[in-house]
Image (cartoon, rainbow, N blue to C red):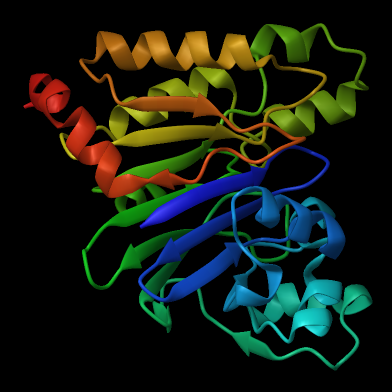
Length: 273
């Protein structure tokens, strides 16, 4: 299984996942042209995408869904409530499939396991994506007001995580945002802080976890080096030394091979046992 976060932040989010003969996008929050350009940077052609899995209707996750689906004939998977909330970007010419949170579905060689999250959207979900051939498991939770028991269960045992680290608590408090916006971001239906992400990441640690990409960083209330330091130091104290990086808004991460990262970091994870 290979993964690249094509970009993540308030201006757009999209994740590329490849396993076996299947290539999917989790969300498509950039324009169709921008997604195609970012895919090209990691050596993937836009028409090769087999499906788009949408987590919720916010424009930074759906901005390019309609255009991309119509241009390339790519099927789109979303919940019924999310589809209703996306009415303005859909024209009836797309191939749409409805899924239910809590009920896995298959896209080629991938099993997608959607689970409910806590966020201010119509029907927000996170996803675990499993390579049916190797059993490798990827967990994605990028808009997460707070972890719940259900979310912890869904993300347990993942070989790789894309986890939100949206804001620094001090930077949010001292930002120029209106009080109402600050309260929304920090609420249980808003976004995870660096500090909360660090605590949650430690809860999800196990010896097979090969890497974590921190995602959905706020341009106004966070810094990449700050998120890396806070989360990285917490994980190091817990005995974990796998791959850790921050997804950028303006360009994709490298195309990361999860199995390769597991073998590379395997001996270092023994301290977790």
